[in-house]
Image (cartoon, rainbow, N blue to C red; front, side, top):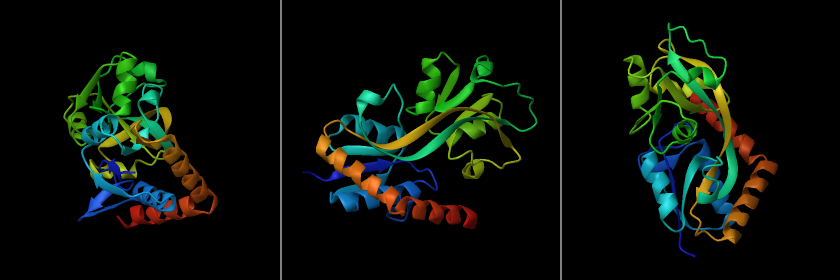
Amino acid sequence: MPPLVITAEHAPPASMKVGDEVIGRESEKIREMLARSGYRYSIDVLPWKRAYTMAQRDPYTCVYSTSRTPEREKQFKWVGPTDEAEWILMGRAGRAYQLNTLEDARKLRIGTYYGDARDEFLRARGFDVDPAQNDASNPKKLLLGRIDLWAVGVRNNDISALAQFASPEQLVPVLVFHRVKVYLACNRSVPDAMVERMNSALDSMRKDGSFARLEKKYEQWQVRK
């Protein structure tokens, strides 16, 4: 078998590159799973659109952390879940938003980015989305009033990771509008037997406490940062 090509986006603390090393909570889960499976691989952090397109197009290529949605179900083979996420609409502090459900945001312009699951989800339902080339542009657009809301994915309603984009005094959560599980999404050329073996390795990691150990490790990382 050729080595698997594993990609991710820069999304601390889940996945990030420090020097030449790819680290992070999800990165370490993927590395441990592949070590237990016995498969050779390379791993890199790339812009999301490029990483996602490679997994769609290139044999033996996978991308994490990928939201598993009905629209994507048949495009990939799925290993996981490795984590869960909440999709939140973020707004400007000081602005009065009257949102009880996602439908209440239909008249507002929502910032997304190309290739992202939230962009696909909102676009398919007819919302007014304004996609950017990368997610880092959206908080700037929001603060400048070019969009009304920013659709972002966070873990367990923890918006502390968003501090890399803007201060908590500037942006506030307005509405949790969806919950998803995230996976390693593999090109359909990856044999079923490999997918089954990787899923079995993840199951063993959940049972022996490896998942919990890595969760704890990166909770401490967030505190240090």
